[in-house]
Amino acid sequence: MKFNSKALALAAGLATICLTSHAEVIPLKLAPGLWEETRITMINGQNVEEAMRKGRERMMARLTPEQRKQMQEQMGRGSSGGATQTCLTPAQVAKGVDTEEIKRKMEQSSQGCKLDIITANSSGAKFKAACMGPQGTNYNGSGEYVVANNKEWRFKMVGDGKVTGPNGAPVPQAGDFHATQEVTARWKGSDCGSVAPQQEG
Image 1 (cartoon, rainbow, N blue to C red):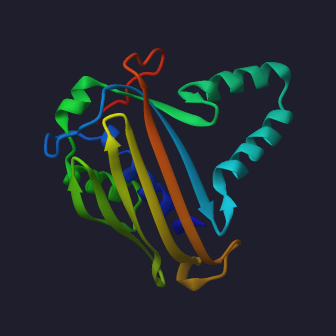
Image 2 (image 1 turned 60 degrees about the vertical axis):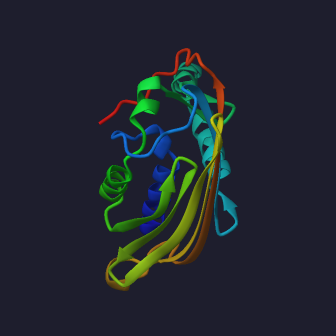
């Protein structure tokens, strides 16, 4: 699902705008420190994270004990119980959110997709996204990012689209799809421990 993946990547990127901003445009009212995100992505009723987890388990079962231990150590970095941990620094909080920079980065990382940020302030943001394929619009979605307080933010996206190959040619898993994604992030403490801050750039 080529365009499906692009659309989800675009939405997921917007869900982390509080952690990837650069210019001081919108004040970022979040506490610096260690944050933990949990997300649920559903495509046509299938839990994507659960499917990926089962796939990883099948892969791990084929490894040697030494390879399995090494893989577990690598996969364990920055995560806890299926959640993702990130480190938000005081400097990142001070810089705030540049919506134009976010829009540019998301569209560059998901070519063929257009992101329209409808509203954005220190309490959250609303957006619409569309991904264009050879036969026109393959995906249309909308979402909302809400800062509940300085120690919790939430994100929700819903979208519908159609998967086709070049010039409308049939491809595996072709057809209509309905996708949703919900993300909840909570502050865990001021000490990030071994979780390194996300690199800016």
